[in-house]
Image 1 (tube, rainbow, N blue to C red):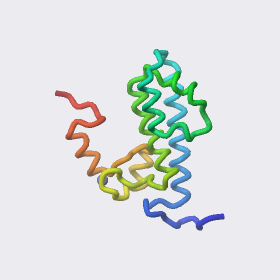
Image 2: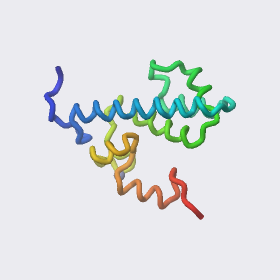
Image 3: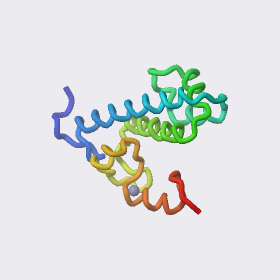
Image 4: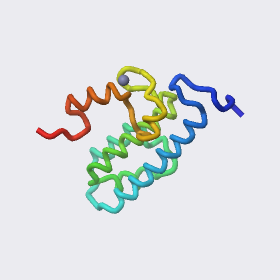
Length: 138
Ligand SMILES: [Zn+2]
């Protein structure tokens, strides 16, 4: 069913690659959720809003309330989760694999190493120089 294997979308990925990355994202999400669960914290309404904005509510796999509770209080893991959820949303929208800044193809090799990557290498470097999500000393 669907397009034959080897047919690439505008994101430069064929169906098999997309499926593989989708599975990796799922694994990452489960791992991050487990990490969040192991670090208890207080529920923050801000976190809940953040995740609603990230499109988590479209995912029927998790009850939203449970997720909001689990997410509370997890710093880095929370950030990672936000990226994963955003990547899943782009998958659903057909925007996955395209740089959110310049619209270029991110490329399978980079996505395989970092399934939640939202930028091509060039834009990611720019973002990091600007002091973006990656911690920058000084
Ligand atoms: Zn870019």
